[in-house]
Length: 337
Image (cartoon, rainbow, N blue to C red; front, side, top):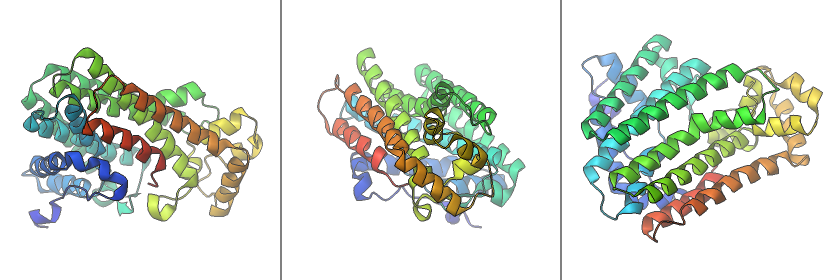
């Protein structure tokens, strides 16, 4: 394959993601940087990295870096935003590659995963390569506070993945454990991206904390909404079968709330972790959870985190970036994929 095969472009903005218009030039620069950073003399490494880079995604994590920097000052150092934004996206790419190997996932967003195309061994090692590239970029930026932030993110995400793997197949997982997995797996990353943007722009401690809190609550809302989509989404849009978490034995919030309330406990426990579960059986579970108000309660948890995220922005002065962050909160709970 020629090198041109793997040249990716910044995601096209839709009405739902129009809030990213403010940082579109940053996202274009970050995408160009990513295309340069995946270069390798080892052709297989380059091919796999390009496969992951071109697989899609909205680049929300680097967008969080850019928006946070602009929320502090209208003209942050664009070169630093590019470098740190590319670094966090490389971390994200590495975690996706590793997660797909651990979960034995064959498709993502309707396309074959890297491990399905190249094999698990090469995928794991190339994921390590992407992570090393990210750390090198952070070293180039040279801000120890940002290096420490992203290092802490990576540690907590790894712990979260292990916690989730250990909890897989256990229908009695405590809600506190579930929320801690969400915090480590997703929220700390978004929180850290917002903190990095604030640090780039020289934020004081109050504004850095405000943006970090926004990121934390947005990340929690995003993952709860994602877990809800597993029961309510359109498979042709989400790219994965309805009820995948139930089939795989992942006790997410809808399932745990039903267990807590004693709703069809025996039946749900019997279906939990059954890879042969039919679409009809999943639809029956969705109907049960909907009738019992479980899906609405799950949606409310996501909404509460969104409201907390919006409230966290109160210390920030009015700005287009702040407006974009507020628009993003609506996107998180209304998205369909």
